[in-house]
Image 1 (cartoon, rainbow, N blue to C red):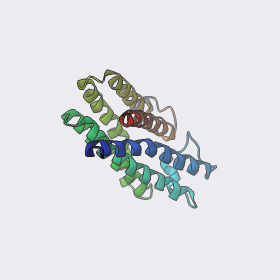
Image 2 (image 1 turned 120 degrees about the vertical axis):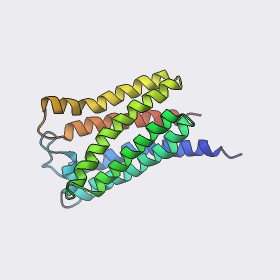
Image 3 (image 1 turned 90 degrees about the vertical axis):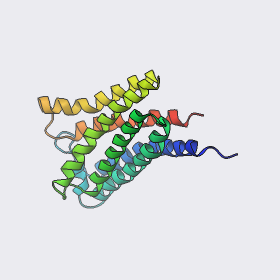
Length: 198
C-alpha cells in the first residue's frame, strides 16, 4: 500500500532540505578554493559570483540550485508539516520567499545593480523573520524543544547583521553572510531529519 500523498510530499521536502545546504556550501567553498584572492574580511561572498573562469559560474549555480532545493523544502516539506496551522503556513510562505531571493542572488549577480543588493537584503532579512514566525507555530503545536531551537537559530542568523550595523566589526560582509547562512542551514537539516522520522 502506497504512503499517503502528504507523507510523500513531506519526505520529498525533507530530503530537499537535507541536500540544499550541503550542495550549496560545497559549491561556495569550491568557488572560494578556486579564487585565492578571496578575503573573509574584505570581500562579500557575492564577489565570487562575478569572478571569471570557473569561480563565478560555480558560485552562482550553487546558489540557484540550493535555492530551488530549499524552495521545495519550504513548499512540500514545511507546508505539509504544519498542516492547517495558519501561523505555520505564514512562516513557511516567508521562508519560501527567502529561498526565491536566494535563487535571485545567483541569477542577478553583482553585475546587476541595484537588483543584486535588493535580493541579497531580502534573503538575509526574510530568513530570520520566517524563523521567528515558525517559532510561534512550533510553540502553538506544543513542540517546545523545536520552538526554543528555532528562535535561537533566528537570533544567531540576525545577530551578525545587527552587530555589523552597530559596530562595523568587519570591512565587508562575508563573515555575517556565512554565520547567518550556516545557522539557517543547520536549522533546515535538523527539521528535515525530524520530518523524515517514521
